[in-house]
Amino acid sequence: MILVFVESAEGKIKRTSLEAIAYAHGMGGPVTAIALGNVDATELTSLGKYGAQKVLHAADSKLNQGIIQAYASVLTKAMQDEGADILVLANSSLGTPVAARVATKINASLATNVVALPDTSSGFVVKRSIYTGKAFSVVDLTKPKKVIVIKKNAAEPKEVGGTAQVVPFTLALNDADFAASITSTEKATGEILLPEAQIVVSGGRGMKGPEHWGMLEDLAKTLHAATGCSKPVSDMGWRPHHEHVGQTGVKVAPQLYIAIGISGAIQHLAGVNSSKCIVVINKDPDAPFFKAADYGIVGDAFEIIPKLTEAIKQSK
Amino acid sequence: MFVICEADFEFYLSCLTFLRAISLFTMKILVCISHVPDTTSKINFVDNNTKFDVAGVQFIIGPYDDYALARAIELKEAAGAGASVTVLNVGLADTEPTIRKALAIGADDAIRVNAEPTDSFFVASQIAELAKGYDLILMGRESIDFNGGVVHAIVGELLGIPSVSPVMKLDLDGTKAKLAREIEGGKEYVEVSLPFVAGCQEPIAEWKIPNMRGIMSARTKPLKVVEPKNIDQTVAAKKFELPPPKGAVKMVAADNVGSLVAALKNEAKVL
Image (cartoon, rainbow over all chains, first blue to last red; front, side, top):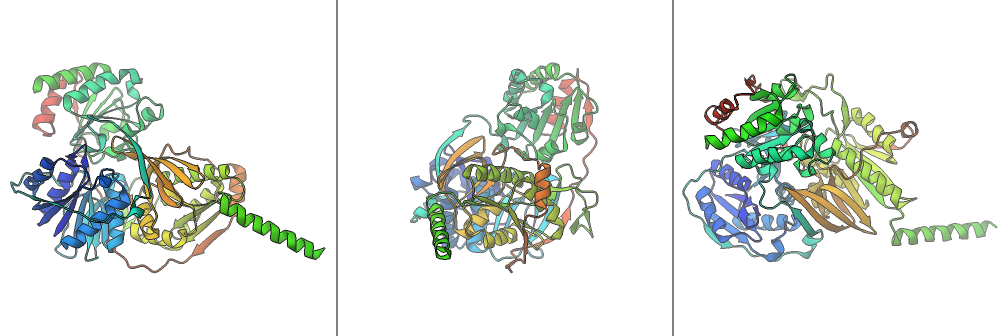
């Protein structure tokens, strides 16, 4: 039995968690999902469509905040109660540390940044992304229990037409697990979040200043895309730090990455090399980013961006 | 005379104990550093894709670990005399220049666990073995080679203390800390008591560059080598792979963006 931790934001299940269910379903299941804290009831039921047979819901209001130690204890208990030997989670600021603690508690093999289904022909062999997307490591998870954290796009959410039974999951929470307390959060709401976006539009120094971001945001809005930026742009304070894409910023793996006015330093490429398709727009024909791109346009960003936005609107 | 001196010494010791008990006077910070290829390195493998090719590669302190080290030194300076920063690395003898650099930046002493850092659980177990007694255990959010991003959480779990990552801001107020952690699309503010583990990232502090005095004194600072604790391996590395080479870029004329939209729709199928 495979347990999948599904993460939610504002009551809605995250797409990356649907990928985790698809991954577990792809392994052959059976799949039990577990959600913690406040999640819409319809969202929980809908997990059946994606391949979960059962959905556990730990609705204790103390779990409305993503407290890492508490979440790890709940998942550990759920694995024991359900007799699960595999836990699948999507990589996130919550999922990954929770996975690490669960694996440590149950003496499991742990792999993060997993990009493909395991090969079980000999052992339990997974492929993980390393060197910030520049290579892969193939590792055998040798312990009877495994905790797998998947990288974005490791599996495609598919409606497989099942139904899931939603079961309340109650347990006694341990006060010691709440030693680190979340006092407040600052979160962009209603926007498409960069790490989870299917399309990303990023700007670099070639955008010449924060006052020119409006046209880039228009393009992003037309594409239902998140906006990102290069390191110099966030260092200069043109854009907030959480939009910095690259080796030391956010690593993205969208279907489409559009880079405008970014030369393509190797550190930036490290943050985008898992993208399915890369479009580069730059006035310098020798910008190194073109070598890593699928499509390129040489020209003035300020002329191309509005034209591109218009062309996309017309094609809809 | 002798008796008086001894009594004074005892008084001094008891004062020290008292000061330790009431303040951060002897705050001990452990900073765990990785020894990784420079971010501009070309990645290749040798020995039938089982070993990283070190030829022509420059090794550095992990960039995230470097932020952790910089913040640790700031905290030590703010805490005053008696506070200390120890750096810890799990690695073979070839990591010593990287450790010496951390000493040159301002750490007081160093420990090297003499073992190849094969996987996150192995490294975290070695750290946890030596981390007891430290008030603050800092490291980068992840190493930039294997990108596990879990060592801090495993160390926290092994020691039974909280772990917070990725931390962008870390301020101490007595034995309590206020942190800002980056989450998807924003920040989360966390309060936690010492001791705890933090995985750090920018902008927690500015990287520090060693000065000449630091480089000279680093040569004589203590670097202790300890043998690894025997732990039960949980994963077995089989081989490395490189991604398939990228096809050539297709150029589109600047006055024909419509054809780009068509290609994204019909050819790449991403719109």
